[in-house]
Amino acid sequence: MKITQREVANAVVLDLNGKLTGGPDAETFREVFKSLLEQGKKNIIVNLEKVSWINSTGLGILISGYTTVRRGGGELVIMHASERIESILYVTKLNLLFKAFETEEEALKSLSGSGGAS
Image (cartoon, rainbow, N blue to C red; front, side, top):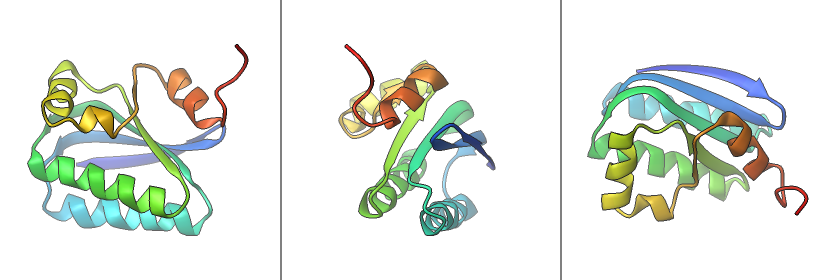
């Protein structure tokens, strides 16, 4: 699993590439989220576009990250989940926990506070 970090507007986007299956990835993720919160970066978008596979341990990593960010007063959303990953989130009811977006623009808007004009 490769994690690339970039800042866009009011958020940090974590672009993931590979399989999210646990092992050393769990500790890497923990360190990334901890570091971001220590830097005062609380709006985090996890880009799953290049994640080819996720297992239960990978879901646990996402949940742990979500919990860490929320406890730190931030928000974590996901974007570009494949149909396979979306169906896993649905079956496990994690779609109720994670806000998922199809585009980066939608994800950024969701983090900008009240969401904009009606």
